[in-house]
Image (cartoon, rainbow, N blue to C red):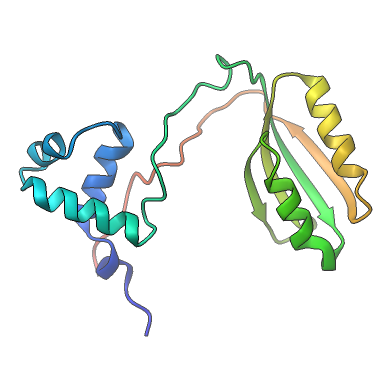
Length: 159
């Protein structure tokens, strides 16, 4: 029987996650003070969130432009059906690829990648197209990033 999301993930979990998303370096003590709960409760909740795979890791947010990655691209890819999973696994290994999706529609794969310059992008696209199981790609260059945020910012806890 499938559990309801609210049984696995409640408002306190969400509040802890929001604080960690703002600053993952905060101590359990500071989180507890902000939420007016016991430090042990924060510790136990965080450990539970980690064990259940809700918290997958901790990271920093880097400004890609300031780090020299001036091109953000969205590439749509048509792949040969029986090689789709192989194509996705191979694409996922590339460090420039930051998001990879198995999608519906005219294309099979959508990926988001960052490159330092057009030459890096060109080499990547040519390498992808050199694979015999890749039928077609469409590359879109992002002109401006309007929103880029992978945090969970809202959750409905009402039944």
